[in-house]
Length: 286
Ligand SMILES: [Zn+2]
Image 1: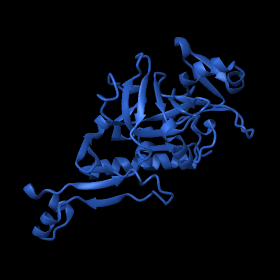
Image 2: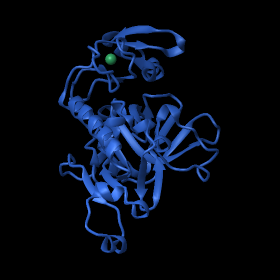
Image 3: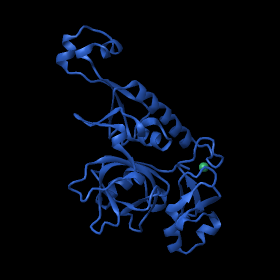
Image 4: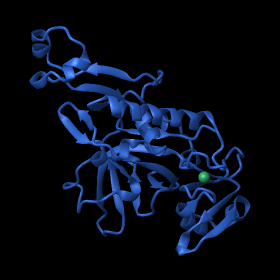
């Protein structure tokens, strides 16, 4: 994207990247969470010049299919594939179990694992029949469980899969199930509780606009009233996703399990991470 539309202040201004990067830093900070793709209006990001000389640029993780600004890339192809795959999992499975470690390992995460949820007691008392017929076996009904990692879930949400609206049950920990549509929340739709104690954790997702200088806070592109403090887990997270400077996270996709609540002045929504494992960041690969 050579240009981006900025909607700051309720007006629409088209900026070329040269014009935008020449703005005073305070103007850039004010405007960067109000950027859109000029063609499809997908939420866009601004990446500043890198310390090793990569040029500043605009981009979007949300181009609609067919938008001319959304240049094909292996990353985009993979996201689209994951979206198709997750839609298939939704239609096939009764329960989707999230494996938080699946996307953390350095190994290939392309395999969807299928497991069968059953107690040994039930399975030993049942005749050997396949899962499809067992599903309709009345009181002995057995749920078909598919396991997904955070990477596929995030990619599919960014590419507009059915997951965000689905009633499919998502199992986070043994026995803790939520309907997908109640669990996955884009940052723009985050509803804060009065305080951290009252907040129920959910899976929040979206894209990162920018960080503060100390890399202690992630600021989403999707909205301007949410802040995600990461200082507690900063070194683990930056190392896992191979990030050495804030610019690398500008435009990154992110999903995390955490609690949303108001700051003490009720001016900003805080999303607090559950732990260092329940987060996945899709760093831009180009
Ligand atoms: Zn676009």
